[in-house]
Image (cartoon, rainbow, N blue to C red; front, side, top):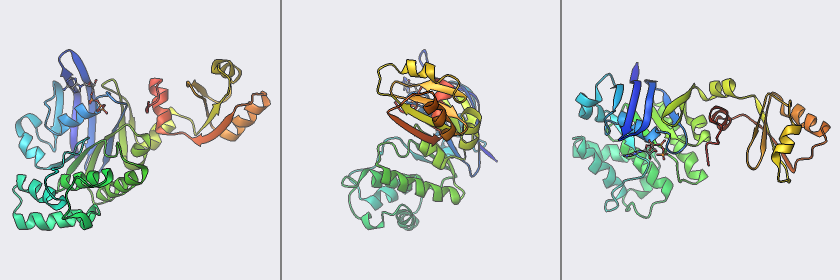
Length: 306
Ligand SMILES: Nc1ncnc2c1ncn2[C@@H]1O[C@H](COP(=O)(O)OP(=O)(O)OP(=O)(O)O)[C@@H](O)[C@H]1O
């Protein structure tokens, strides 16, 4: 079943078009991602899906309902984890959940039991009675995710779920989100981290300048828009272009970045051997598999994380 259906969806702010006619379908049980750099239009799209920002144009159906007419009914079935944690600092960890539950008309006793269950799920049981302020960034984010689950939503919207977290905290959030997905919850997330998209998303769209530039599973996108391996070469010299000229014909494609040259190749070791045959001596050589970062670079000519 299609839970989110958008055709030619547009969001304008005055003369500025933030979302420029995108088509999206999200199926039940999917983890779907919007991947793109800052300003690509991801949050604007999420806010329209969350029924807190009306579309300027196009068709949008959520849970087979119309956001304009049925906003409250849709919102009751969504869980929202915004980009910035907006937890109530005056309340305890548990109270943040029980108070939020009251907005959905959940009876006090049920709310308390659900809060305890959710605190267990996000591994915050031991902090239930403490205030929010002293929690680490990762704990706050997990509490925000728990809060988004209070109404047992069918779709959870996560706007950059791990931005600003350290690597360990990110992995813990990913692991919890993966569990949620296993439980059949539909996840829709935005991210500008390609590793996050690769870890979490069954399918994603790559956005740039308000438009969708590619769509597919992480693996399909990499297969379609990149090669199997990438050789990263760094040279000590000032002029990379000179070296780039000498590398012509090695592999399928070459990208010159300010600090390195990327060779897109089927076999990295073969390409490195060819570089050596041409008597070029890079300061460092790294052979790695292609990633979504390479897909984005190929599609837009820019790196994703700037
Ligand atoms: N309320 C608004 N009024 C005017 N312009 C806006 C508004 N909200 C967003 N924009 C602009 O729309 C563009 C897309 O913003 P949006 O937040 O959707 O991008 P994003 O991909 O989510 O990036 P970020 O990761 O920075 O949130 C940006 O150029 C932004 O400045």
